[in-house]
Amino acid sequence: MTILEPRGDELFIGASVPVNRVALDPLTVRHAQALTEACNLIAGPQVRNVATLGGNVAHALPAADGTIPVVMEDRLLQIGSWLKVNGEAIYGTKPWKSTRQWSAGEVPKTDYNKEYSTVYDVNSLTSKPAPGKAAIEAFFTAKGNDVFAILPRWPGRQFTVKDIGAARLKSVRLLGSEAPLRFTAQAGSVSIELPDLPELLLSQPAWVLRLSRK
Image (cartoon, rainbow, N blue to C red; front, top):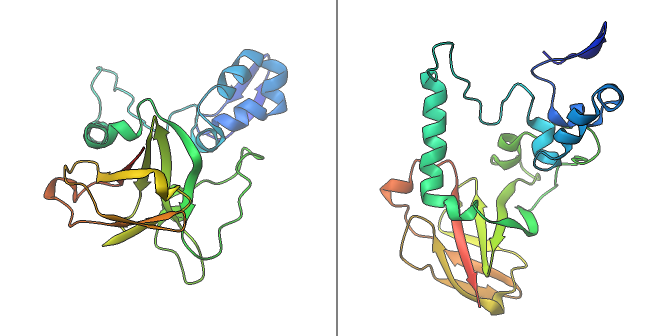
């Protein structure tokens, strides 16, 4: 499944070969230039490092009769439900000046942009870290005057966004809830008081704070 090799007059690429390997491997550069160029256009290096030609990021191939297997249908419905609440943090956005925020501790050393074989396991990077280690607390996107902090773990009663330019901040809201959140500016960072999660949001895999600036 991870084989990339010439076979006679053909180039065999396994379904589990990462897109970034297809984009960078000398065999595809030499024998399949159009495919190489197409793979380089897919998302960014972090996505290309884990996405495969066979499809594993949002995998929902239909069966022979055209139906989608139930487990894959459930996955698509879950994605749709999350986007219904949090889609404004995704659609029409761009990366913020910082794409992620780490907790205190030692940050894992990974050269994401150098090797197609680099492991990018989001679950391990966002899970509760071991003592002395860091984990990703938030991913960031931006649109207009808004910055969106996507939280992979619910932090509890308080969360601090670093280097936000607190003087320009006018409001903070949890997507899916209408009530504005209280916040305090602290030397360029913002400390946000978080509410009890509404029942609708309890089962979400991630939560989004919208920070609106002047």
